[in-house]
Amino acid sequence: EITVKIANYFNVTADYLLGIDPKNKEKVFIEENIKIPVFKELKYSDEINEKNPNVEFIFPVVAERYKTNNKLFAKIVTTDEMYPRIMIGDIIIFEELKLGTDKIYNGDICLVSKGNDFVKIREIANTNDGYVFNPFNTNMPPRVYDMNRIRKENVHIIGRAIKLIHEFPKRGE
Image (cartoon, rainbow, N blue to C red; front, side, top):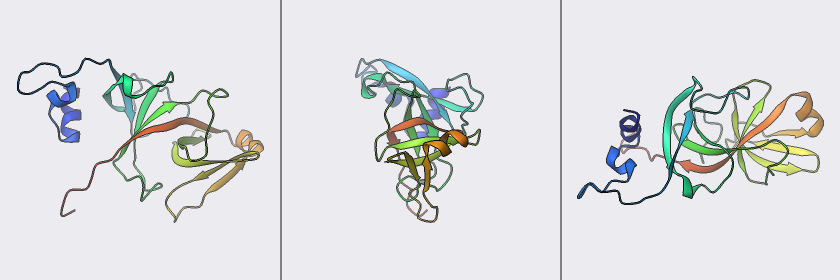
């Protein structure tokens, strides 16, 4: 049932998602699939797993395509904060970052949480003593946080984008 919903969402067949050749109904590939939770809304305090009540659906992906030891999850873009590069309705697959062990690089697209507000998607730039959180939307200003402000305002970088799933608009829209 969930596979059919995902197939309908992406306008493909369930067989296509499962890697089954429609001509002979045999699996085309034998690769390990993993299932990742997809969220519309997410807060820092939320558990990132399929049991979370905020999970919209579970998305199967081929494990070998995402070489990471970190937990994977996805977020449906619901705002225009990253427009025009990332659009409302796009799905971004993230790797969960481990505090203090995972390095953040200039240009990384990350999920940022302040306090227990809903997460925001931002491009990260490192400074000497903190980060600049930059939305692509030019109507929204970048935010500069030094480490003191990060601690004081309880700011967390909880995930790094590793894949963008973008759906092109249908003609006439």
